[in-house]
Length: 339
Image 1 (cartoon, rainbow, N blue to C red):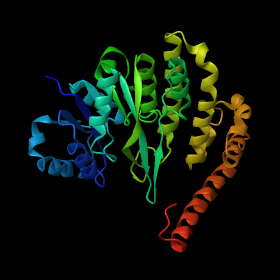
Image 2 (image 1 turned 90 degrees about the horizontal axis):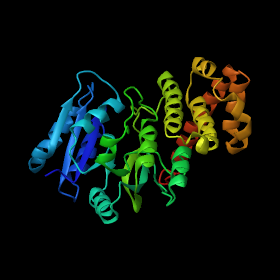
Image 3 (image 1 turned 135 degrees about the vertical axis):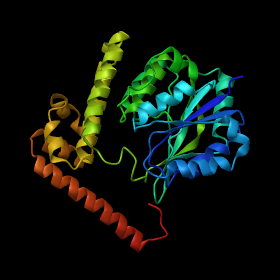
Image 4 (image 1 turned 45 degrees about the vertical axis):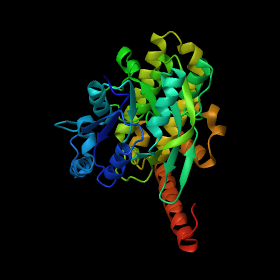
């Protein structure tokens, strides 16, 4: 008989986090779980630490699969490899630098069976060095609103790891990120899952701890890959919506998220060259949405728009110094206060 849940865990460069992650998985209250770890050719000792944790749970041995990639292929490929090996009724994805509450799988699976749901959504705990913040993942009862919300990625979160998803959705439909799409890959897949799902429900609790202070996380440093993946993401999304005959219905709602994506990239990269190369993205749409951005983001967009790339880089450096200096100062003055 197939397990109730398969938990998929790509492993790459997470030595400082993998033990806490693995313990949280093996201590789930739901017993009928299959664990699939993908060693994506990690260069550190993450796998040694993982094997040491696995050895502490001999009763889980038959339920653990470890699959090796001979070369690093990226997050999208690692998850796809894990999906091919999974046999669970439902799929859960956990990043190996994060951890989950002991009752997460039990509660989400119970809700899935109670509602006969394709997807069950829960809230998220964002873990910073000095505080924890709960983020709500809203799910509209109306299918069209759900899709608009997931495109916007504001009240509805495009993450995969706070969701339990019926495996049949992955098997029957093209709900995987193409290999090489390692930024916005969650959003790429979640949009398709939301399109195909018949029933989506949510649990009004937060179980998933998303660690925001891993310096090796792929989202920390915005490089050429992030810009290239952003262009590819929007191209693939428009193609998908056109194929489904719904592009015109949602076209207007896609423009601001595109500009917002560009703004974040421009604010987060320190590269003069990347700002110059991608300055032309969505220049016609920017002015329409300027009032929806924070003042500093508006300034960044305007500097890039007018090709003042040196000033844009200077602004980014000033903001980095200001933010880090302010954090340091506040910790020195008020060491017991969480910000």
